[in-house]
Amino acid sequence: MNKLMISDLLKMKEEGKKITMITAYSFPQAMVVEEAGVDMILVGDSLGMVELGYKDTVPVTMDEMLHHTKAVVRAVERAHVCGDMPFMSYNISVEQAVTNAGLLYKEGGADSVKLEGGQEMADKVTAICRAGIPVLGHIGLTPQTANLLGGFKVQGKSLEAARKLVEDAEALEDAGAFAIVLEAIPGQVASLITERIKIPTIGIGGGAGCDGQVLVLHDMLGLFKRFTPKFVKVYADVYSIEVNAVKKYIEEVQKGIFPSDEHSFTMKEEVVKELFKALGMK
Figure 1 (cartoon, rainbow, N blue to C red):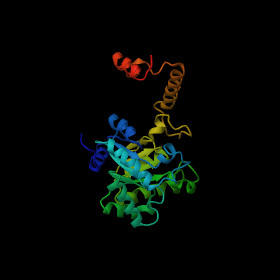
Figure 2 (cartoon, one colour):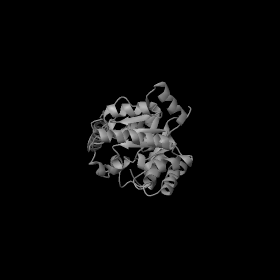
Figure 3 (cartoon, one colour):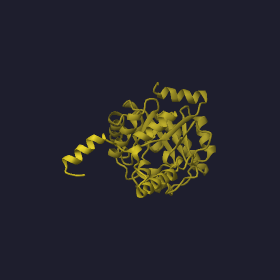
Figure 4 (tube, rainbow, N blue to C red):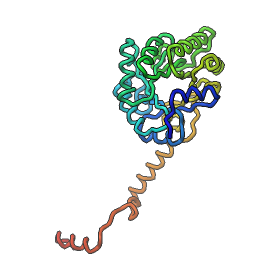
């Protein structure tokens, strides 16, 4: 099974083949999406909300990202694994950005890193790429700075805002990014960006015109009940399946149904008798 390289992803755009990406944060999750045949796995800082229970992605640390990235990498052979750079791990300086990107790439084992922001992050993207680390860009709704954007809202709906998104995408391409995530922007704008740049676009609420799509695993499996974004399609209600399975377990334990002989270990009857005799029991 050959590892998907950056060149493979670029070729997919050239040939019009859609790229699939899903988030995963643990070894068993990564095993599932890898076996299913996904092209890219994003170890997103969304783990702060769906795995760690934070109200948003802001509190996520580099140590947490490293921990989860390492777990995912251990399960993967083919898919391209991208590690998310958490808030304030790259915002302060170019040196800080390269150092932390290096941690995810070298220690975490990620195939690339992702960071949020457009033109204002171009210098950091360039520096990270020059260090030999592939970068996935992310524009539109950027969750780490959602408060500056008025909350978790669609971006790029005005002429000025749409033009800035196009300029941001072009700046990231020029800076060396190998692909760009387009989150929560009008489909027309996402399609325009996809046509104007040579690197793949990965949509999450960006419409069908993008070169690929990404969804949070917990969203698509119905595991995250706090809220479900408009752009999410729920493919299975795994949450209810898990709850019902646990309820069944509780019921069977309380009624003495589980464990049955099938799930228990036994020893030879003569050994049991000898044990009882040794203990003075009948």
